[in-house]
Image (cartoon, helix red, strand yellow):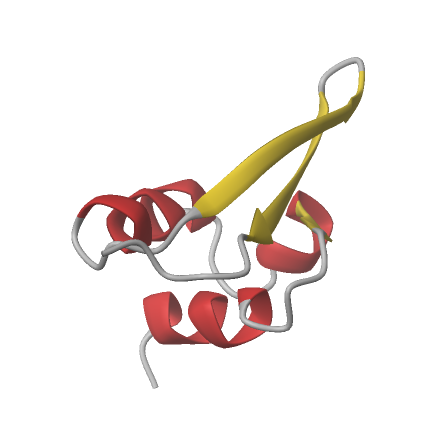
Length: 64
């Protein structure tokens, strides 16, 4: 399973995930998230939870 697929599997639970959860999969998690957004059409939200602290969360539905 590719790193991108591993990130996708994690995000598909619909829960917010911090960079600390994504970095063990790949340090380049932001590139995988961006590819899932642009190339595969997934609606992945980046939510600011504190100063310089963000979580990544899959929206409920895949974009058309």
